[in-house]
Length: 385
Ligand SMILES: Cc1cc2nc3c(=O)[nH]c(=O)nc-3n(C[C@H](O)[C@H](O)[C@H](O)COP(=O)(O)OP(=O)(O)OC[C@H]3O[C@@H](n4cnc5c(N)ncnc54)[C@H](O)[C@@H]3O)c2cc1C
Image (tube, rainbow, N blue to C red; front, side, top):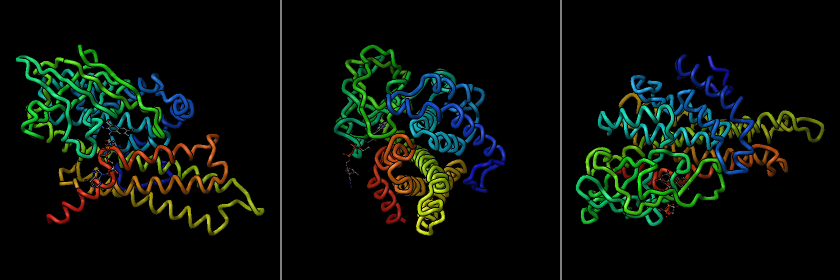
Protein backbone atom coordinates (compact mmCIF):
# COMPACT_ATOMS: atom_id res chain seq x y z
CA UNK A 1 0.00 0.00 0.00
CA UNK A 2 1.26 3.45 -0.90
CA UNK A 3 2.79 5.52 1.87
CA UNK A 4 1.29 8.62 0.36
CA UNK A 5 0.31 11.08 3.05
CA UNK A 6 -2.68 11.75 0.82
CA UNK A 7 -4.23 8.30 0.34
CA UNK A 8 -7.36 7.73 -1.69
CA UNK A 9 -8.87 4.34 -1.02
CA UNK A 10 -10.16 3.86 -4.56
CA UNK A 11 -6.81 2.77 -6.05
CA UNK A 12 -5.93 -0.86 -6.76
CA UNK A 13 -2.73 -2.48 -5.50
CA UNK A 14 -1.21 -2.23 -8.99
CA UNK A 15 -2.00 1.46 -9.14
CA UNK A 16 -0.50 1.99 -5.69
CA UNK A 17 2.69 0.21 -6.71
CA UNK A 18 2.84 2.29 -9.89
CA UNK A 19 2.29 5.50 -7.90
CA UNK A 20 5.08 4.54 -5.49
CA UNK A 21 7.50 3.90 -8.38
CA UNK A 22 6.77 7.27 -10.01
CA UNK A 23 6.94 9.03 -6.64
CA UNK A 24 10.32 7.47 -5.90
CA UNK A 25 11.70 8.52 -9.28
CA UNK A 26 10.36 12.07 -8.90
CA UNK A 27 11.73 12.41 -5.40
CA UNK A 28 15.15 10.88 -6.07
CA UNK A 29 15.92 12.05 -9.59
CA UNK A 30 13.69 14.99 -10.55
CA UNK A 31 13.72 16.94 -7.29
CA UNK A 32 17.48 17.68 -7.26
CA UNK A 33 17.21 19.27 -10.73
CA UNK A 34 13.99 21.27 -10.31
CA UNK A 35 15.48 24.64 -9.37
CA UNK A 36 18.12 24.51 -12.06
CA UNK A 37 15.60 23.51 -14.76
CA UNK A 38 13.27 26.34 -13.70
CA UNK A 39 16.06 28.93 -13.65
CA UNK A 40 17.46 27.84 -17.04
CA UNK A 41 13.99 27.24 -18.50
CA UNK A 42 15.34 23.96 -19.83
CA UNK A 43 14.27 20.40 -19.18
CA UNK A 44 17.10 17.98 -18.40
CA UNK A 45 17.62 15.66 -21.38
CA UNK A 46 18.67 12.79 -19.10
CA UNK A 47 15.35 13.01 -17.24
CA UNK A 48 13.42 12.80 -20.50
CA UNK A 49 15.37 9.64 -21.36
CA UNK A 50 14.47 8.24 -17.93
CA UNK A 51 10.77 8.94 -18.58
CA UNK A 52 11.02 6.64 -21.60
CA UNK A 53 13.00 3.99 -19.72
CA UNK A 54 10.36 3.92 -16.99
CA UNK A 55 7.57 3.51 -19.54
CA UNK A 56 5.99 6.84 -18.57
CA UNK A 57 5.82 8.13 -22.15
CA UNK A 58 3.65 5.26 -23.37
CA UNK A 59 1.52 4.39 -20.38
CA UNK A 60 -1.58 3.24 -22.20
CA UNK A 61 0.07 2.20 -25.46
CA UNK A 62 -0.42 -1.58 -25.80
CA UNK A 63 2.51 -3.78 -24.85
CA UNK A 64 2.57 -5.20 -28.40
CA UNK A 65 3.68 -1.73 -29.57
CA UNK A 66 6.26 -1.32 -26.82
CA UNK A 67 3.99 0.57 -24.39
CA UNK A 68 3.15 -0.23 -20.79
CA UNK A 69 -0.44 -1.35 -21.52
CA UNK A 70 -1.82 0.66 -18.59
CA UNK A 71 -5.00 2.67 -18.13
CA UNK A 72 -5.84 6.34 -18.58
CA UNK A 73 -6.08 6.61 -14.79
CA UNK A 74 -2.49 5.39 -14.54
CA UNK A 75 -1.43 8.23 -16.84
CA UNK A 76 -3.17 10.63 -14.43
CA UNK A 77 -1.37 9.05 -11.47
CA UNK A 78 1.99 9.58 -13.22
CA UNK A 79 1.14 13.20 -14.07
CA UNK A 80 0.03 13.88 -10.48
CA UNK A 81 3.14 12.34 -8.92
CA UNK A 82 5.57 14.09 -11.28
CA UNK A 83 3.77 17.42 -10.83
CA UNK A 84 3.98 17.06 -7.07
CA UNK A 85 7.70 17.65 -7.63
CA UNK A 86 7.68 19.55 -10.93
CA UNK A 87 4.74 20.70 -13.05
CA UNK A 88 6.92 20.80 -16.18
CA UNK A 89 7.77 17.12 -15.92
CA UNK A 90 4.05 16.56 -15.35
CA UNK A 91 3.03 18.31 -18.55
CA UNK A 92 5.51 16.62 -20.90
CA UNK A 93 4.12 13.27 -19.75
CA UNK A 94 0.56 14.58 -19.87
CA UNK A 95 0.71 15.86 -23.47
CA UNK A 96 2.48 12.70 -24.63
CA UNK A 97 -0.03 10.31 -23.08
CA UNK A 98 -3.40 12.05 -22.92
CA UNK A 99 -3.20 13.98 -26.22
CA UNK A 100 -0.66 12.57 -28.66
CA UNK A 101 -0.68 8.82 -27.89
CA UNK A 102 -4.38 8.96 -27.20
CA UNK A 103 -5.24 10.55 -30.58
CA UNK A 104 -3.09 8.06 -32.51
CA UNK A 105 -4.52 5.12 -30.55
CA UNK A 106 -8.06 6.25 -31.35
CA UNK A 107 -7.76 7.51 -34.91
CA UNK A 108 -4.49 6.09 -36.29
CA UNK A 109 -4.43 3.42 -39.03
CA UNK A 110 -2.53 0.27 -38.09
CA UNK A 111 0.57 1.35 -40.07
CA UNK A 112 0.51 4.75 -38.31
CA UNK A 113 0.21 3.06 -34.92
CA UNK A 114 3.11 0.81 -35.81
CA UNK A 115 5.36 3.68 -36.92
CA UNK A 116 4.45 6.31 -34.36
CA UNK A 117 3.29 4.60 -31.18
CA UNK A 118 6.30 2.29 -31.01
CA UNK A 119 8.58 5.35 -31.25
CA UNK A 120 6.48 7.47 -28.89
CA UNK A 121 6.74 4.70 -26.29
CA UNK A 122 10.50 4.44 -26.60
CA UNK A 123 12.26 7.57 -27.88
CA UNK A 124 10.12 10.26 -29.52
CA UNK A 125 8.53 13.14 -27.64
CA UNK A 126 5.22 14.18 -29.21
CA UNK A 127 3.42 17.54 -29.39
CA UNK A 128 -0.12 18.64 -30.15
CA UNK A 129 -0.55 21.75 -32.29
CA UNK A 130 -3.98 23.35 -32.44
CA UNK A 131 -3.60 26.97 -31.21
CA UNK A 132 -2.50 29.91 -33.35
CA UNK A 133 -1.87 33.59 -32.62
CA UNK A 134 -5.40 34.52 -33.66
CA UNK A 135 -7.24 31.38 -32.55
CA UNK A 136 -7.10 30.17 -28.95
CA UNK A 137 -10.49 29.69 -27.29
CA UNK A 138 -11.99 29.97 -30.78
CA UNK A 139 -9.75 27.12 -31.89
CA UNK A 140 -11.66 26.24 -35.05
CA UNK A 141 -10.97 29.68 -36.52
CA UNK A 142 -7.46 28.36 -37.18
CA UNK A 143 -5.76 29.69 -40.33
CA UNK A 144 -3.03 27.12 -41.03
CA UNK A 145 -3.79 26.11 -44.60
CA UNK A 146 -3.25 22.65 -46.10
CA UNK A 147 -3.41 22.76 -49.93
CA UNK A 148 -4.02 19.56 -51.85
CA UNK A 149 -0.94 18.75 -53.94
CA UNK A 150 -1.99 15.35 -55.29
CA UNK A 151 -0.04 12.87 -53.22
CA UNK A 152 0.61 15.36 -50.43
CA UNK A 153 -0.77 18.43 -48.65
CA UNK A 154 1.26 21.61 -48.53
CA UNK A 155 1.01 23.34 -45.14
CA UNK A 156 1.39 27.13 -45.00
CA UNK A 157 1.14 29.26 -41.87
CA UNK A 158 2.08 28.92 -38.21
CA UNK A 159 1.12 27.59 -34.79
CA UNK A 160 1.75 29.16 -31.41
CA UNK A 161 2.07 27.96 -27.79
CA UNK A 162 3.07 24.40 -28.59
CA UNK A 163 4.10 22.44 -25.49
CA UNK A 164 7.24 20.29 -25.95
CA UNK A 165 7.89 21.96 -29.32
CA UNK A 166 11.64 22.13 -28.60
CA UNK A 167 11.93 18.42 -27.84
CA UNK A 168 9.27 16.80 -30.03
CA UNK A 169 10.02 14.52 -32.97
CA UNK A 170 6.40 14.24 -34.13
CA UNK A 171 3.58 16.78 -34.05
CA UNK A 172 -0.17 16.34 -34.45
CA UNK A 173 -0.96 19.45 -36.47
CA UNK A 174 -4.44 20.77 -37.24
CA UNK A 175 -4.82 22.61 -40.57
CA UNK A 176 -7.71 23.49 -42.86
CA UNK A 177 -7.89 21.79 -46.28
CA UNK A 178 -10.85 23.91 -47.43
CA UNK A 179 -11.58 27.12 -45.50
CA UNK A 180 -14.89 27.48 -47.41
CA UNK A 181 -16.15 24.52 -45.36
CA UNK A 182 -15.27 26.26 -42.07
CA UNK A 183 -14.52 23.84 -39.24
CA UNK A 184 -15.46 20.92 -41.51
CA UNK A 185 -12.22 21.55 -43.43
CA UNK A 186 -10.06 21.00 -40.37
CA UNK A 187 -7.79 17.98 -40.75
CA UNK A 188 -5.23 16.41 -38.43
CA UNK A 189 -1.74 15.65 -39.77
CA UNK A 190 1.19 13.70 -38.36
CA UNK A 191 4.19 15.93 -39.08
CA UNK A 192 7.70 14.70 -38.42
CA UNK A 193 10.27 17.20 -37.19
CA UNK A 194 12.63 16.83 -40.15
CA UNK A 195 9.91 17.41 -42.78
CA UNK A 196 11.14 19.99 -45.35
CA UNK A 197 9.48 23.40 -44.86
CA UNK A 198 8.80 22.80 -41.16
CA UNK A 199 10.76 24.73 -38.52
CA UNK A 200 10.47 25.43 -34.82
CA UNK A 201 10.08 29.16 -34.16
CA UNK A 202 10.54 31.29 -31.04
CA UNK A 203 10.35 29.82 -27.57
CA UNK A 204 8.23 31.61 -24.95
CA UNK A 205 9.81 32.96 -21.74
CA UNK A 206 7.11 32.07 -19.20
CA UNK A 207 5.87 32.76 -15.67
CA UNK A 208 5.55 29.09 -14.74
CA UNK A 209 6.23 25.54 -15.99
CA UNK A 210 9.38 27.18 -17.33
CA UNK A 211 11.26 23.94 -18.03
CA UNK A 212 8.46 22.84 -20.34
CA UNK A 213 9.16 24.29 -23.78
CA UNK A 214 6.40 26.33 -25.44
CA UNK A 215 7.19 27.18 -29.04
CA UNK A 216 5.95 28.57 -32.29
CA UNK A 217 5.84 26.24 -35.31
CA UNK A 218 6.42 27.56 -38.84
CA UNK A 219 5.19 25.90 -42.02
CA UNK A 220 6.56 27.17 -45.32
CA UNK A 221 5.24 24.98 -48.12
CA UNK A 222 5.70 22.03 -45.79
CA UNK A 223 4.81 18.93 -47.80
CA UNK A 224 3.13 16.27 -45.73
CA UNK A 225 2.34 12.98 -47.52
CA UNK A 226 -1.38 12.15 -47.67
CA UNK A 227 -0.68 8.94 -45.79
CA UNK A 228 0.12 11.17 -42.79
CA UNK A 229 -3.45 12.41 -42.42
CA UNK A 230 -4.69 11.21 -39.02
CA UNK A 231 -8.29 10.03 -39.23
CA UNK A 232 -10.39 11.28 -42.12
CA UNK A 233 -9.80 14.56 -44.00
CA UNK A 234 -12.25 17.15 -42.66
CA UNK A 235 -12.71 15.30 -39.36
CA UNK A 236 -9.87 17.02 -37.51
CA UNK A 237 -12.33 19.12 -35.49
CA UNK A 238 -13.72 15.92 -33.98
CA UNK A 239 -10.24 14.64 -33.14
CA UNK A 240 -9.38 18.00 -31.55
CA UNK A 241 -12.54 18.22 -29.43
CA UNK A 242 -12.53 14.62 -28.30
CA UNK A 243 -8.83 14.52 -27.46
CA UNK A 244 -9.03 17.75 -25.48
CA UNK A 245 -12.06 16.44 -23.58
CA UNK A 246 -9.79 13.68 -22.31
CA UNK A 247 -6.61 15.75 -22.02
CA UNK A 248 -8.39 18.07 -19.62
CA UNK A 249 -8.45 15.30 -17.01
CA UNK A 250 -4.67 15.12 -17.29
CA UNK A 251 -4.41 18.85 -16.63
CA UNK A 252 -6.56 18.29 -13.55
CA UNK A 253 -4.02 15.63 -12.50
CA UNK A 254 -1.19 18.14 -13.01
CA UNK A 255 -3.07 20.63 -10.81
CA UNK A 256 -3.67 18.19 -7.93
CA UNK A 257 0.00 17.20 -8.10
CA UNK A 258 1.20 20.80 -7.84
CA UNK A 259 -1.35 21.51 -5.09
CA UNK A 260 -0.32 18.37 -3.17
CA UNK A 261 3.35 19.38 -3.33
CA UNK A 262 2.56 22.87 -2.03
CA UNK A 263 0.32 21.51 0.72
CA UNK A 264 2.88 18.98 1.95
CA UNK A 265 5.61 21.66 1.97
CA UNK A 266 3.39 24.04 3.97
CA UNK A 267 2.36 21.32 6.44
CA UNK A 268 5.95 20.35 7.10
CA UNK A 269 7.16 23.97 7.38
CA UNK A 270 4.39 24.85 9.81
CA UNK A 271 5.65 22.14 12.19
CA UNK A 272 9.23 23.45 12.05
CA UNK A 273 8.75 27.20 12.08
CA UNK A 274 8.37 28.59 15.60
CA UNK A 275 6.94 31.98 16.56
CA UNK A 276 5.73 33.15 19.97
CA UNK A 277 7.60 30.19 21.47
CA UNK A 278 5.80 27.42 19.59
CA UNK A 279 5.52 25.88 16.11
CA UNK A 280 3.13 27.96 14.00
CA UNK A 281 1.14 24.73 13.40
CA UNK A 282 -0.02 25.04 17.03
CA UNK A 283 -2.01 28.18 16.24
CA UNK A 284 -5.61 27.45 15.46
CA UNK A 285 -5.57 30.12 12.75
CA UNK A 286 -2.82 28.19 10.91
CA UNK A 287 -4.52 24.84 11.53
CA UNK A 288 -7.68 26.15 9.89
CA UNK A 289 -5.69 27.35 6.87
CA UNK A 290 -4.11 23.88 6.54
CA UNK A 291 -7.47 22.16 6.97
CA UNK A 292 -9.01 24.34 4.25
CA UNK A 293 -6.15 23.52 1.86
CA UNK A 294 -6.59 19.82 2.58
CA UNK A 295 -10.35 19.95 1.93
CA UNK A 296 -9.87 21.72 -1.40
CA UNK A 297 -7.20 19.23 -2.40
CA UNK A 298 -9.34 16.24 -1.45
CA UNK A 299 -12.32 17.55 -3.41
CA UNK A 300 -10.14 18.27 -6.47
CA UNK A 301 -8.53 14.80 -6.34
CA UNK A 302 -11.88 13.08 -6.10
CA UNK A 303 -13.16 15.03 -9.09
CA UNK A 304 -10.08 14.29 -11.21
CA UNK A 305 -10.05 10.56 -10.46
CA UNK A 306 -13.81 10.31 -10.78
CA UNK A 307 -13.58 11.62 -14.34
CA UNK A 308 -10.58 9.44 -15.21
CA UNK A 309 -12.44 6.37 -13.91
CA UNK A 310 -15.49 7.35 -15.95
CA UNK A 311 -13.32 7.58 -19.05
CA UNK A 312 -11.66 4.21 -18.38
CA UNK A 313 -15.11 2.72 -17.78
CA UNK A 314 -16.48 4.03 -21.09
CA UNK A 315 -19.00 6.43 -19.48
CA UNK A 316 -19.72 9.92 -20.77
CA UNK A 317 -17.24 12.00 -18.78
CA UNK A 318 -17.18 15.33 -20.65
CA UNK A 319 -18.97 17.45 -18.05
CA UNK A 320 -17.15 15.81 -15.15
CA UNK A 321 -13.80 16.39 -16.89
CA UNK A 322 -14.60 20.08 -17.44
CA UNK A 323 -15.69 20.41 -13.79
CA UNK A 324 -12.56 18.62 -12.59
CA UNK A 325 -10.25 20.88 -14.61
CA UNK A 326 -12.09 24.03 -13.59
CA UNK A 327 -12.18 23.16 -9.90
CA UNK A 328 -8.71 21.65 -9.57
CA UNK A 329 -7.00 24.57 -11.30
CA UNK A 330 -8.76 27.15 -9.10
CA UNK A 331 -8.13 25.07 -5.97
CA UNK A 332 -4.47 24.63 -6.94
CA UNK A 333 -3.87 28.36 -7.29
CA UNK A 334 -5.57 28.98 -3.92
CA UNK A 335 -3.67 26.20 -2.13
CA UNK A 336 -0.31 27.37 -3.54
CA UNK A 337 -1.08 30.96 -2.54
CA UNK A 338 -1.93 29.93 1.03
CA UNK A 339 1.27 27.86 1.10
CA UNK A 340 3.25 31.05 0.37
CA UNK A 341 1.33 32.81 3.17
CA UNK A 342 2.26 30.05 5.62
CA UNK A 343 5.95 30.26 4.69
CA UNK A 344 5.89 34.01 5.46
CA UNK A 345 8.81 35.93 3.92
CA UNK A 346 10.57 32.68 3.07
CA UNK A 347 7.63 31.77 0.83
CA UNK A 348 8.39 34.77 -1.33
CA UNK A 349 11.94 33.62 -2.11
CA UNK A 350 13.39 31.05 -4.47
CA UNK A 351 15.15 29.35 -1.52
CA UNK A 352 11.85 27.57 -0.82
CA UNK A 353 9.67 25.63 -3.25
CA UNK A 354 6.28 27.30 -2.81
CA UNK A 355 6.70 30.37 -5.04
CA UNK A 356 7.37 27.99 -7.95
CA UNK A 357 4.32 25.88 -7.15
CA UNK A 358 2.23 29.06 -7.27
CA UNK A 359 3.78 30.18 -10.58
CA UNK A 360 3.21 26.70 -12.05
CA UNK A 361 -0.39 26.61 -10.82
CA UNK A 362 -1.56 29.49 -13.01
CA UNK A 363 -1.37 27.63 -16.32
CA UNK A 364 -4.16 25.22 -15.33
CA UNK A 365 -6.74 27.95 -15.81
CA UNK A 366 -5.46 28.74 -19.31
CA UNK A 367 -4.46 25.77 -21.46
CA UNK A 368 -6.70 23.01 -22.86
CA UNK A 369 -9.59 25.47 -22.55
CA UNK A 370 -9.65 28.47 -20.20
CA UNK A 371 -11.83 28.43 -17.08
CA UNK A 372 -14.51 30.37 -18.97
CA UNK A 373 -14.52 27.70 -21.68
CA UNK A 374 -14.99 24.99 -19.04
CA UNK A 375 -17.92 26.94 -17.56
CA UNK A 376 -19.38 27.24 -21.05
CA UNK A 377 -19.17 23.46 -21.61
CA UNK A 378 -20.68 22.68 -18.20
CA UNK A 379 -23.52 25.19 -18.63
CA UNK A 380 -24.28 23.99 -22.18
CA UNK A 381 -24.52 20.39 -21.01
CA UNK A 382 -26.63 21.28 -17.98
CA UNK A 383 -29.06 23.27 -20.08
CA UNK A 384 -29.32 20.49 -22.68
CA UNK A 385 -30.30 17.88 -20.07
C1 LIG B 1 2.19 27.45 -21.50
C2 LIG B 1 1.18 27.16 -22.57
C3 LIG B 1 1.19 25.94 -23.21
C4 LIG B 1 0.26 25.68 -24.22
N1 LIG B 1 0.33 24.47 -24.91
C5 LIG B 1 -0.46 24.30 -26.00
C6 LIG B 1 -0.29 23.14 -26.84
O1 LIG B 1 0.54 22.26 -26.57
N2 LIG B 1 -1.04 23.03 -27.95
C7 LIG B 1 -1.96 23.97 -28.30
O2 LIG B 1 -2.60 23.82 -29.33
N3 LIG B 1 -2.15 25.08 -27.53
C8 LIG B 1 -1.42 25.26 -26.39
N4 LIG B 1 -1.58 26.39 -25.61
C9 LIG B 1 -2.58 27.39 -26.01
C10 LIG B 1 -3.75 27.44 -25.06
O3 LIG B 1 -4.56 26.32 -25.24
C11 LIG B 1 -4.48 28.77 -25.28
O4 LIG B 1 -3.62 29.79 -24.78
C12 LIG B 1 -5.83 28.81 -24.60
O5 LIG B 1 -6.74 27.94 -25.24
C13 LIG B 1 -6.42 30.23 -24.58
O6 LIG B 1 -6.37 30.81 -25.82
P1 LIG B 1 -5.76 32.29 -25.99
O7 LIG B 1 -4.46 32.33 -25.31
O8 LIG B 1 -5.80 32.66 -27.42
O9 LIG B 1 -6.76 33.21 -25.15
P2 LIG B 1 -8.13 33.86 -25.71
O10 LIG B 1 -8.93 32.83 -26.40
O11 LIG B 1 -7.78 35.10 -26.44
O12 LIG B 1 -8.85 34.22 -24.35
C14 LIG B 1 -8.56 35.43 -23.62
C15 LIG B 1 -9.60 35.56 -22.50
O13 LIG B 1 -10.92 35.68 -23.08
C16 LIG B 1 -11.79 34.72 -22.53
N5 LIG B 1 -12.75 34.30 -23.55
C17 LIG B 1 -12.52 34.01 -24.85
N6 LIG B 1 -13.65 33.65 -25.47
C18 LIG B 1 -14.63 33.70 -24.53
C19 LIG B 1 -16.05 33.42 -24.53
N7 LIG B 1 -16.68 32.99 -25.62
N8 LIG B 1 -16.73 33.59 -23.37
C20 LIG B 1 -16.12 34.01 -22.23
N9 LIG B 1 -14.78 34.26 -22.18
C21 LIG B 1 -14.07 34.11 -23.30
C22 LIG B 1 -10.89 33.56 -22.10
O14 LIG B 1 -11.52 32.78 -21.10
C23 LIG B 1 -9.65 34.30 -21.60
O15 LIG B 1 -9.85 34.69 -20.26
C24 LIG B 1 -0.70 26.64 -24.57
C25 LIG B 1 -0.71 27.88 -23.90
C26 LIG B 1 0.21 28.15 -22.91
C27 LIG B 1 0.19 29.49 -22.23
